[in-house]
Length: 244
Image (spheres, rainbow, N blue to C red):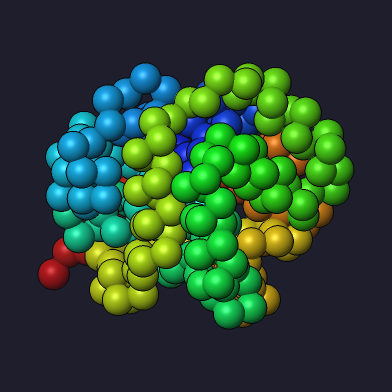
């Protein structure tokens, strides 16, 4: 049976994937582990350390699976390719090789956001959750759905959130992905407000009428795309080795 591992992004725990639950095929095993520091899971001693993150997530990220990393989760999953045995495939959802881009979220944009976070961390997190929904067909409806899923309690430690902003500012997976020993798929919503046009153009799969959070606006279509990718790599794994 194919296994799909879903990895959430900045400020959201694994509950963000719940809207997809009704649409998974029966022959697909889906797991959504939380990152350290989220949903009651202890934060790392150094939340920016990829070595510590790899040790903490090793049991959650098996090689015999397809990893799906959304936003910051995709950046972290790509970085962990250097620290863990590679998966059958990596799916980058709503993210490119790096987060910052002059035509997307610029260095100045993120620096301003980080300054605001230092002053008012929870208000800034709430602002980000609204901001990332700007490309959905109905941002207000998507926001209501997000609040219904996550509630009002903060699901993540402040130190982990601050470390995540540091990783968004500094992680660049260009060389890691170029040398990846597994297939890498890039899946985006065509209206994602956080991605530059160049990043949207480089994606090999696109979801129409979706922004940065297709799990809220297009859950059935997203689940179908991810299930198809998982099935493709299940077939690859079952294909017999060529004989000499």
